[in-house]
Length: 418
Image 1: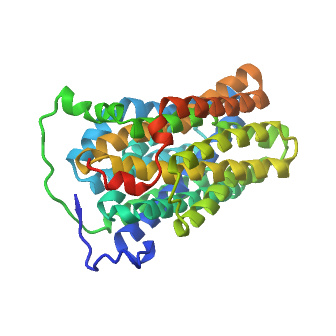
Image 2: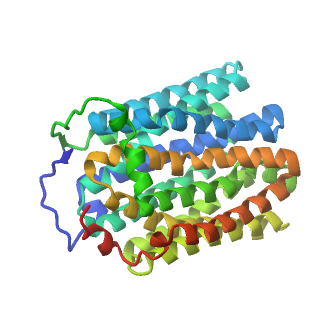
Image 3: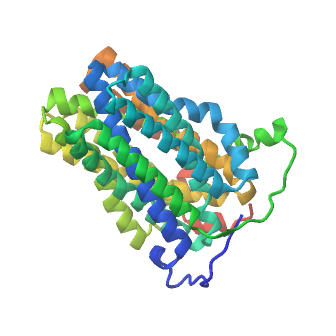
């Protein structure tokens, strides 16, 4: 896939907002992330309001996770064999349709848990395609030397939306849940339009016959590369154990008694921390000791989760949520460029599909884990157990994936033959 742009690439004066393809992708990332975060707040609040069940909150996370598992091989094949721009737009249209159904059934007072779970499942399916392909695009439009800065900038876009989305979603909940879903519908369609505006000249991909070998090629590649496997699996298991955000409606209503406005602020705080760090790293990128920085960030993520669970003060809990998001971003800006630089373009779709399963959907299965453990042991105990599990994973992975821990610079990776 070749991206065509009239202006020449100026690496020395590179800026996201001076380079049209990345700028359009940045705004598309903002709008779709806004929609995703807002619907997550609305769905969580509506399910808990209807049922008062921590278990069903976890089940909503599971519904987002299931499509990523079932479609991972299909997503990879579609991404590497078809027009990635068209696939993203179709996926966003499916997401828009699902939130549209939620809006209509809420307005007509016909919404129920099965309808909500079905719509969340549909959003998860669309997101599986969208997330994987979004990851595969940046290395095709910028050179490796500025890829970390590009990913940091795109991550900043996502985190900015993650800050604004929950807050706006919480405010719109005052007017009614249907208003949140209707706004999400508009945002998903706006993102699809922005992707369409990126001018792309496509080279015909090599159409290998579909076989077990091509179907599992991405998984085989990952299993043989300790850098890629270690980075993906570290985030997967760390987030599974540290997925406390699913329980925030319980903290907002039952522990701190702060209502929807407090829920919106709590959902926003990890993103504010991540956004702060992503802006800093876009201007002052990490250049050395990349592996150590990534592992340190994940360990701090686990510690912040524990401290949040132990806190009995709402302002202090907000600070720990801020620290949680900030520490996670150190991992993101190292992990994502490493994975993309280690992967050849003709396999990025398949590897990104697995990466989305490992990283993106780890949030959903983490929410399920948190809901189940909260149901068994209580909300606070669930959060503390999850944070401790994250730290244990870091200690194990430092030994098992020593080459990842020893990665020093990005230049080591993109200057080495693939």
